[in-house]
Length: 215
Image 1 (cartoon, one colour):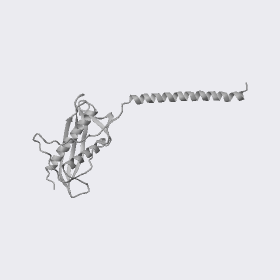
Image 2 (spheres, one colour):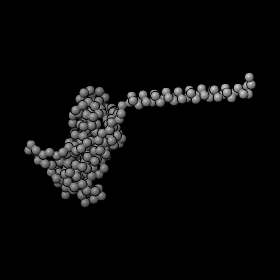
Image 3 (cartoon, helix red, strand yellow):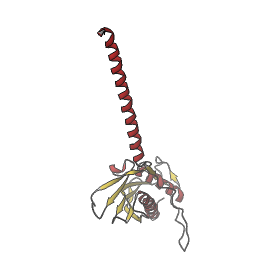
Image 4 (cartoon, one colour):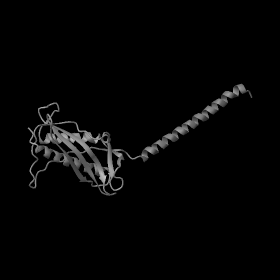
């Protein structure tokens, strides 16, 4: 047996075994990756849905028309900058905000609320561009926008904000809050409750603006 001729065969055999082992390892990783993917829950995204339709009736008059108004960009705390859907266990950890793992907003709730507010202003009057300093401006700062659990099975959507109306100086400022019960103790229930609370707090805010007798 000539070692000079047998060594390449040995190397070729070792290389073949190594390639086979690598292929088996890659196949195992691929299978484990598929299993992990199947085990993960998919992420669900939400927006606020269509705004609540104004349905005057039962002796309730239609909302009063508003004067021409411009709306500044809505701001909020830093934790509302992302698209996380937050909840608070008021009955157990009242000082801790937590985010749902697989349920998200389609964009930051601050931006979603800002769009909702502008739609409501336009529906009750004329929404002017912000550079028009001849008309009053509305500035909203979100303070709270989360699902609050009073127990393991009951919760509500809470929206709290500070509204400021100004034109060459402040014309009025007030804090508003709306709470709406969630139909289910999960993210889907929280989203619906927050949408209803948003509509309620915006309606109260615009009613207040109507009392300022703006021109």
